[in-house]
Length: 145
Image (cartoon, rainbow, N blue to C red; front, side, top):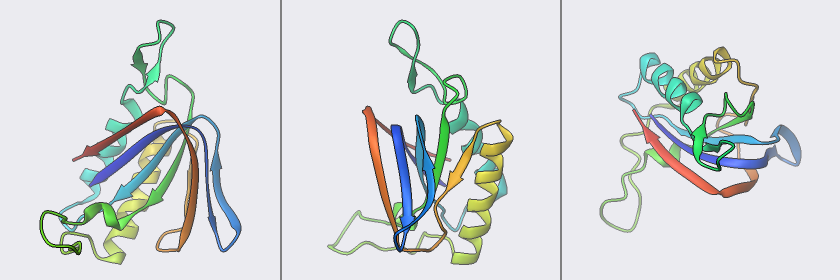
């Protein structure tokens, strides 16, 4: 499971001009699910991201997590993160989870983030989404489990 996290001052996702999720300061998480992933992977990644220290403390050092910063989370499914791009000019998605598996684990991941006490907003699974964000920093990390 892959989480591309971006520290944002705000972010939103729309589908067909309908706002489906919006947050203020916090994390935008683009989530890629691979066929080898399971519920334990989702729980582990959620725990790791919720506690990953990417927010500044009073000394302007990245010592605070999104929990510490009392931030919000916007989770957007993105199967393209599971692409194999090592060769050729076209990505291979052979390691990506099936849509049913990915949707289930996406939901588990979101539930696990909410269980950490975080306000969680989401995109719409498998929809053509438009994601807007203001990356704060910019600060972007890729986490894998």
